[in-house]
Length: 217
DNA sequence: TTGGACAGACACTTACATCA
DNA sequence: ATGATGTAAGTGTCTGTCCA
Image 1 (cartoon, helix red, strand yellow):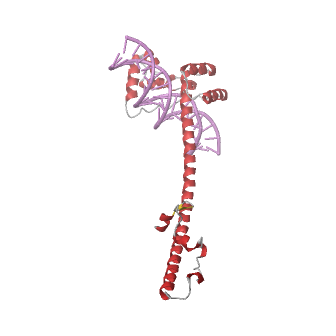
Image 2: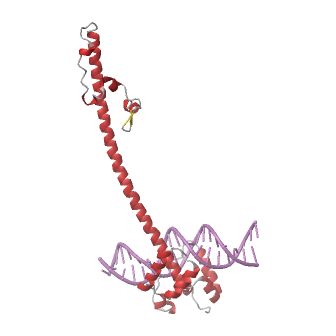
Image 3: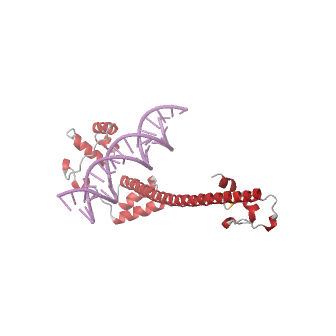
């Protein structure tokens, strides 16, 4: 290389060779390239025009890997996502590629794999969330129904209680004995007679509900 | 122990190839 | 012709390792 190398050519060349190699070939340009690399904002990559800068158009053109190369790379990735130096060199030799290309391929493949995995996790979580929302709706509806039933039950208790008090206060000396009286109609709550109705079970727990909670809704 | 060189990984980006 | 998409490769940064 000589001093006629332009900045543009330096940029182009730097795209295809590591800085270490450039520094051996043209130390001054390497310093400039290294300085440029630390600048912000990012240096825009030059558009790659065929034959520009006297370069070989085919060399500059982005190469697509062959089916065979991809197949071998995929197999290798399938067995291990990480790429040790030794395996990289072996693969590169086997595929006729630059070790750097193999490293880049693994880098990109890991990125694609991670992206796909994140998509799948997102879909799974979304599905679980939707299922949970539906279940929540169902439980809320059930809760409303139960509250309604409880309200009706309280009204019935109140009605029966008033009727009972009326009977007791109107005929304290009635000749009717308790034994002869018809028990009040308890409808669907007639479970085990009046005593059981007014006094919750000792465990205070029936079918997942606390009696205490039922009375204080 | 420390600091610099270096390599590898990763996120982000760019540019090219391909296809609908 | 053109916009969308996939992908090879560039860039910046961080981290771990080695060695003087």
